[in-house]
Image (cartoon, rainbow, N blue to C red; front, side, top):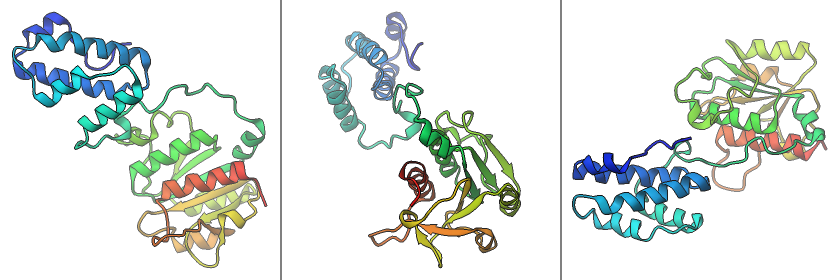
Length: 266
């Protein structure tokens, strides 16, 4: 499989000087993107070193210094590239984050627990938070992600930036009203837990979670709708030790779900 920027020697020779510099810049970006892929990393390194001497005139000194010192070791290479690109923000979607997906065998004990857990997003506004919920749900094998109200679904063009290929691996559905989703789950004998900084509530780490269950997380600015809170069987919170009273909703959901699956019930 080819990487995203690739230039033949003849094509590179025919570029203008500015285009040659831009091509090298793209290759350096690709090098950071594929830092964890040994084969592609080696191929890009080789290409950069072959193309650099063909430039029509000296390239910018910062770029030249980097190219002349590119090491084979990926950790040293990453440090140099990070320093070179330090004024540019790199998003998750611009990094090949890991390799080996699907190469593990889930423990059936924990898999059995996660298969009895559903996650309800009550009017989340951020597509990036919802994407993160997909990723956490896939990693844990959560039974279903229920997107309610204004919560964006996988049809949103920016979802993949945080979901990273997990939307097709997680069972999900959209329900117009969170109330309807909760009432249906109650009919199916699910215990409903709200993750919210409200009273009365108990710490996630001091709560017995009865299965099957659903965890409700709420809007980033307003939290969970009070009407929805009243429908929940229990309210739980994550204790904090700092000035802020809560975490980002997708982070809080991930911590809570990991505790429920791997921490067991009290």
